[in-house]
Amino acid sequence: VQLQASGGGLVQAGGSRRLSCSASGRGFINYTVAWFRQAPGKAREFVSAVKYGVGTTYYGDFVKGRFTISRDNDKKMVYLQMNSLQPEDTAVYYCAAASFLYDDYYNTKRYYNFWGQGTQVTVSS
Image (tube, rainbow, N blue to C red; front, side, top):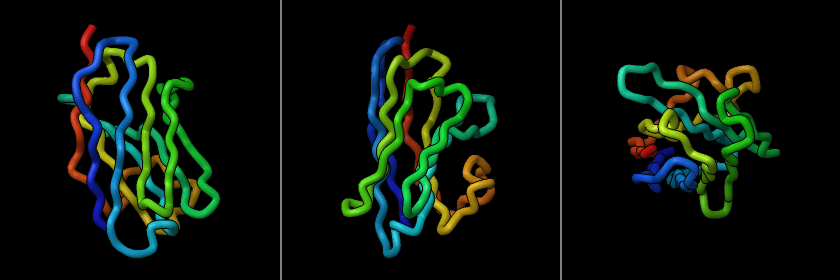
């Protein structure tokens, strides 16, 4: 599967942004899709994931109810709605996918074998 992330840009603190991850290829419904982010000088960290099939969602601890992930299997899309953005949310956001991923691994980047190119989100104070 090929992924393309979009929707990044410049937003003021307290604002919102919706990221989109478009997938191509077969069997999208069988993939867990996640968002990771990487700030300058920092490791890539888990943001959120939506499981294949039932669509169970997972979030990183820092999200604290501000972000919502969703998927549309018919359109082969995954969205990340981000609200109450803060300057510390500034990063390149990547979408990633893995087929039939075990629940225990949803937040571990090495288990995701397909990655999009990333989209920059910059939050100004």
